[in-house]
Amino acid sequence: MTITGRQLRAARALAGLDQAELAKRAQVSHSTLRRMESCDEEIVSGHATTIDKIAKALKNSGVVFIERGVQMALQDEMSIPQDPPYPAPPPPHPHVPDPDAPPDPDEDEPPLVPLPS
Image (cartoon, rainbow, N blue to C red; front, top):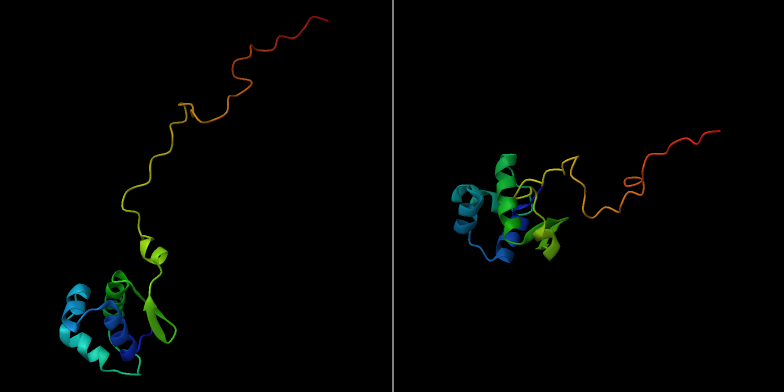
């Protein structure tokens, strides 16, 4: 992700955060954030993981980066978790009948006996 210093400042302002609070939420140093924001129109330089931490903290605050700008995230963009908070339920046991399944027409019929010829 490429972000300019101006985008970073705008995103922080849109989220209503000061530099110290964003640095705390992103778990980066205040001086690192200040240096990145000072890039103005230049692309922010730094470790990719540091930039990702800042972008994630801003996204968690409701801000997303778009081409040449920032905007507030749409409600459904914010509510979709990246990882499920709980494991998926186990598949049904193969020998336990599904109560919602339609009845099997062949299940209760007696076996076919060939007629004598």
